[in-house]
Image (cartoon, rainbow, N blue to C red):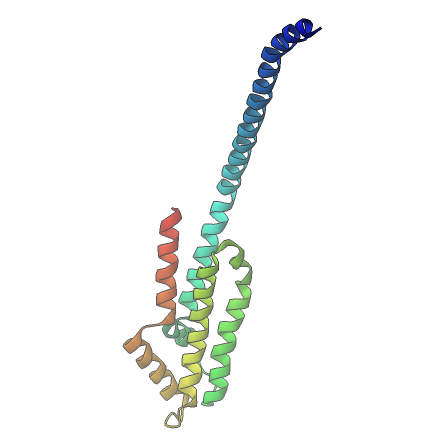
Length: 172
């Protein structure tokens, strides 16, 4: 009986080895095919999303240019000589433009979106800071002071636009 068992084990060993190798190579093949399909799908989705992503960056650069104090002051003329009213007009214009572009954040990196928000908030802060000064008694003086401040220090928008340009250059 012992003699009959040994030839059976000897004959089953190559079949078992071939079966294990076949299963291993089948799993390896299916795994590679799955990764290849995911890669092709990812590449196809990037082809479709790249123009949208680029458009989002373009829109945000346009937004930053529009809220840049120099451009904002040219586009938004004061209705009267009330500096608080003009401050409100400027800040609400910035906020409305921002709300109009909120959906673009899904195409931007978190860091880029935070940089854009920081530029928006810094611009609003600059406008509010200037309007709170006691020595500024008119809208024209307020506009002049804001323009002087951006000439001396630069605009928050410029820094954000530079960041966007750097980020775009990484994936183009």
